[in-house]
Amino acid sequence: QVQLAESGGGLVQPGGSLRLSCAASGSIFSINVMGWYRQAPGKQRDLVATITSGDRTIYADSVKGRFTISRDNAKNTVYLQMNSLKPEDTADYYCYAHAAPYTDVRLYDYWGQGTQVTVSS
Image: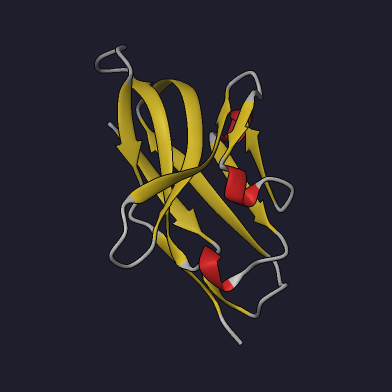
């Protein structure tokens, strides 16, 4: 199986920055896509950004120009640099991976436990 562990959330003032990290571990055969989703209270979980193993990226319109996703394939780790944070960025941020474990080389969706980001003065 594949486990995802997020870190880097916290409380930040509007206009501030945070960097989220997510490391994948376990019996990993390959990881195709990694990314971040977020869920605000009472709302659905939405895409923030994704990145493929070839560094192709997709961003939600609401974060373009402010957030940057990157990936270290050797470490099976994905990062989300969040700048110019706004109160509406407040949410639980979930790491995502589309990966294949060695036990079964088909691709599955995996999720982290989530890390809270609060943007408030």
